[in-house]
Image (tube, rainbow over all chains, first blue to last red; front, side, top):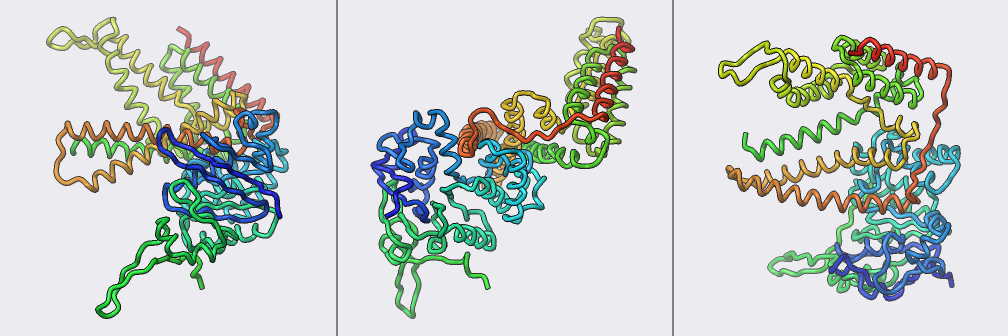
Length: 269
Length: 263
């Protein structure tokens, strides 16, 4: 059995008086891919921020590789650098992540902060721009790119760090079908390596492609935990968690309804 | 045009202006005289010229410095037409408004007296206004200043703050414009001025909340990628003989201008 890379125990978190996570417990194994699914406001983004030690539980605890993630621990000499080298987060809104004057500077920002040598930064950033097929955007200002291009640049800016754990917050939102497909291929390439990928999404159609395990969040708590096939075949659960909607249609004179799931992203021929 | 339309139109224009005002990165990559200099030389040169304009008391010297700036722009492949529209015209309009009262308020020898007798245009007042306008026109900073500041050992936090302010002003102006457009698309008929004012105030409040949220998220995104208060950047700048020649030229022009333009 692989040791947990993240372990959350009875975690609660509130934004002022509004609870986002309630008594959530979850253990994640290293080198595995996990999808956090849930409707808007179910606590997915908050959980990812807690896992990235950007905020801390109001009660309960989270540990990374057996080390508790607390503000004091993060402040301890060298620990934050050690942690940031291992864990990277892609934010849902790329505008939050793109604050440098050029795409090159943007992708180079993380490696520079983590103390890489300048020559290594230049080589790795150039290679990453090619891998992500954004070399032509190298000297462009990130804020002037299309939504899809912004997302790719934001993704490049975290993947370039080559982290052990990649946290992706709604990575396919704002992407056209082809870019979605490319991103899924990228995550699939990471599967089976020693990397851990935790992806939050409410797009059920991509879950089987990006994750071996699915955790359903509902109102800040774990509603279900299982393999993609177990979760996706549980229509009642998906309907309750607001991940599918009841689709009503007529067969002759008879009207009937059933849970309805759209799937478009991977239908390219 | 209704007042709220005017506000929306202003925001749209601002969004466009911010967008075009930040094309300096493209200009900076073109081959040209200023681009050939080390960024630190550009910053020192800029400050030397600005200082010379500030210390000069002769319009002829300020105009000469303006000509030097225009020549530098031409030799650096800066599009003069676009620079004139985006920078000089706007600065001219704003500074004219600011300078206008000095035409009437500066004491001195009247050259025009209005019939009521209370208002005079004085020679000294006109000179002050022209000096102010010419100074600001000439002293408009070069748009590529941020990158040069970074190389000039200005504290990185300050440069990053400036860069981010530029970047997020654009984003917030765009958001504000979208909010006005969205409201306009759901508005039928003419809205009373008082109601439009209330709506504008509310929109301003929402925008302020959004900007606070955005700045928090940006900080978290920076932290997530290892930012610990001292931003590290790539610095590849090296002083060569050409840079020393440029530096001396800028300083020489500045010193000569101050000497000739003294009172």
